[in-house]
Image (cartoon, rainbow, N blue to C red; front, side, top):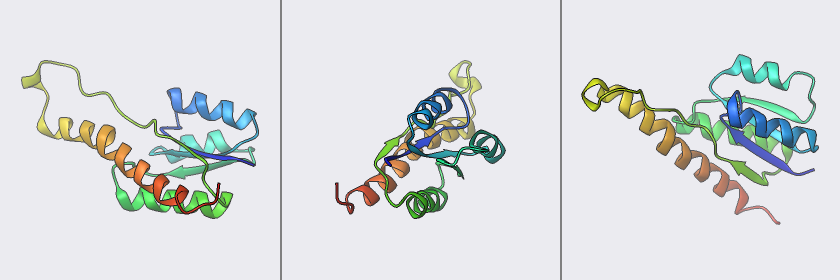
Length: 126
């Protein structure tokens, strides 16, 4: 059975995408910060695995990917979807901390997840 890991899977596009892959019979790793939402979504679905993690934290990303691979045996696809909107307002109204949090999720998170997926997929046989 093919496997996919979807980041940002607790809501929005990530959750809708996860729903489609689950319905198609894929093994789906559901990665997002909101563990309760993931657990609720995965409940009763034998091919779903809740992976609560913060994509901005390398150790959490690596642990989530390791758990997915240990459960599924391999990783076939990453849907690198997690992200956040920057605060709205004039530039002088956005704090440096808010800006850094947005950059961390949208850039660092994408990098860390792509890195973890590549590390795994390149060692597998097709």
